[in-house]
Image (cartoon, rainbow, N blue to C red; front, side, top):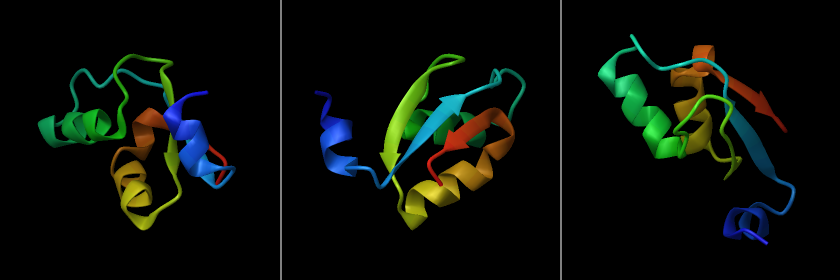
Length: 68
C-alpha cells in the first residue's frame, strides 16, 4: 500500500491534473510540483489541510478535486 494512502485514512483529497500547465505563470507550476503533480491525468492523494487547500485554490483552474 502506498505511504500516502496510510497517512490520509479517508480524510484525504484526490487531486488530478486535468489541464496542461503550459502557458501558466511559473509560480503556479511550482505549486503543481509541490502537490506532486507531474503529468496531465496524474492523480495524487493529499491530506485535507489548510495548506493543501490553499495550494488547490491557487491552481484550481487546472485541477479536478474529489473528497472535499
